[in-house]
Image (cartoon, rainbow, N blue to C red; front, side):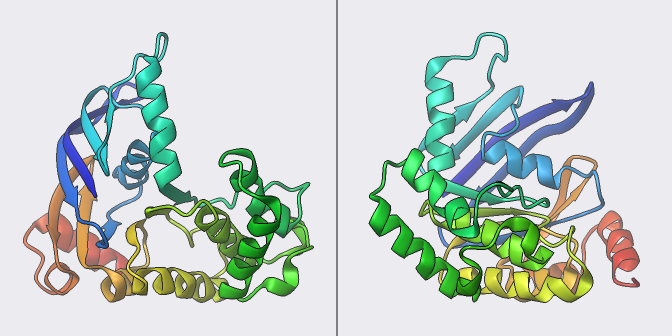
Length: 251
């Protein structure tokens, strides 16, 4: 589903990624863990074309992304980024809902404007998504009238409305109050159980252990370890992983 080869990324003069390679199978759930600033979020943004990279290749279901000249971007590269974003949904730390639109309007906007979908059909599909995340009663509410957990669930529904083939979650619970974390993780678990290819950057170690097929450990822009969750959390191979886990599991 997703192949990354020789990925190099410079960020504010810092050489963050130094030749990362990674393969992700269709239907696989891959969870990225590691210290803040280790590159997890930037890596996801590179896959979705939201961050440029200077060297290497990312292939998403046959669509190739390469380094882009920011001053003179190639038209084909920009078109491929657009194609990838149609296939890969992304949910961010901040909910990024349009504050002047209702919940329903937030969900139907992209299918109508980007896909040219039929309005009646799109509204019904949006209501079905709202039922799925258990907030259909909030369809006519505005984002400011929702709790943080509700807003994040709407953000997930908005991404799903584009019918993606894979979902990327960038620290989806980091902006939530502790009591709201569970309701968002529950929605993500449902997606995972339905077989959606899912990539998640998170600090929720219990959640990572529960849902991941594979855990990838980032540190200082490097993938220092990868393996099944039982192996990573019980018998980490590197000292850097052991130190990281000892710190986060004590909290």
